Image (cartoon, rainbow, N blue to C red):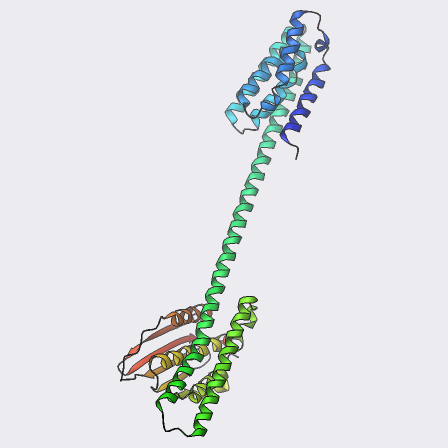
Length: 377
């Protein structure tokens, strides 16, 4: 796209060259004609100001163009500039003035009517073509500006979506860290507390407990390493925890809690073992159980915990974690971030519901997950 200064020079040269084709432009035999030549050259010099003062330039071009032969074609630039402003009334008025000026100029210089009409028709056609060209140019500029605005909005929307995706990823990682490390650390706390209170343990039992603490610590470090890997390189959607954890992992989770000294029982319908749910339903069920065991170990250490899985395809998969109360001291209040993240997973991934609250003799966490045929393993 040509720069405005270059375009102004091209227009000045083109209009001057076109004006020199007229015979009167070469007649400088009197002071009057010299004055008209100077006036025409001065008018041509205002071409760079055509967009800064469009109305004044258009009127000057019409008047001088019909007076000075060297500026004969300057009105074409004037009507073009006005038409490029996309103001209908203003464009019509300036075009009418240009045609009227050309008609007067032609009528004064041509003796015969036929020749007058022929020249007037040509002038009108030139002026109209220049006006149409101005309108088309204006429409093109408007389209380009609109495309630029749309591109800017698209870039802004993309940046906003990227930021939202990053924020969602950070929330996911925070929830992942809370779930994994919180569960491991709660088991460590329970088992270490049991060792601190029991003074009658045999050396073999102490060694076994120390081995459990070591294994649990190792798993916590592995979980932390996994979180760091996620921070460095976000995993693919197919590599998420929901794709690697199933109901067998729930049994392992319960066994792990028992090894840490927790009183946990697991009860599930036989149908779940014969025809288990597929992913991500099983992964969400795993997370419900893990959150329930973590909260039970943290807020009611030593209390009995019951995990119940019930359901069948075409109905609902119900996951219930019920824990007793300690009785000797009030359970501390947690931040609740785990339950908030768990609710988002339950509602977003499965369209299910999550309920939790105290019971007369403990606490219950219950998730109802729609079990459709599509989520069947």
